[in-house]
Length: 293
Image (cartoon, rainbow, N blue to C red):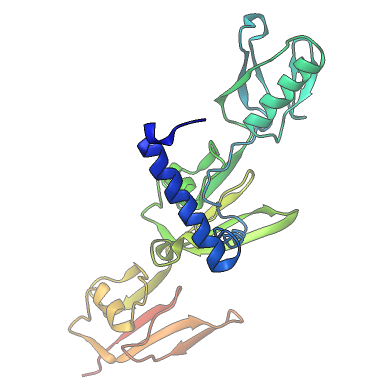
């Protein structure tokens, strides 16, 4: 029999635990349990769930496969168009579309089932990513195709790879691709990505996606102005601001003779006389007439 007097700390802890258990039984008839956590809300499609998604191997990826303590099985190869590789002793193994950990497990399972290695430890290193790529076109500093080196590559990451929007680029971008076997198209206003809830628009880019950056909207001004020509249409620019961007009226110009030529929804050009605080639209042509006096 253990003498608890020889272990005062253990005796005190045991007494406290017994008292707590007795109080719990007296209060509710059962030991209180930790409340269950509410079920996690599924993340919207295209968004990460908090943990970084794992890269999935694609056709053309260059990889190195190593089996621990089996240097004769070291292999550097590329994933074929069919998503397969040829591995020693196993022959053709399909790994395209698998995550790296799943591909490692598939090769290890084949070695174990074939009694080639008792406890295989397989490691795969991606040497060059070519199987998962997305394209950036339009008004960017470096258009082209870019590898998706991580599974959580987002729209802003792809745009950064293209060295950002060029000086001639606008705020509107369009991302197209395929989601769930159906065509996918998303228009994104870039400034909103950095506002509240902007993360929701910064979607994950998938293999084969195309990002298009359109030119910035333009207006045209001619007639009795200091600097006729084309002008970049800034967000919310009014007629008065457009005239100011054109250097203002000449001495012969008059604000009573200002007309704006604008295309309607049918593509027909109409001549209007907007107020000075009215917002201009892409493609508007401003004409300032000469004063008669």
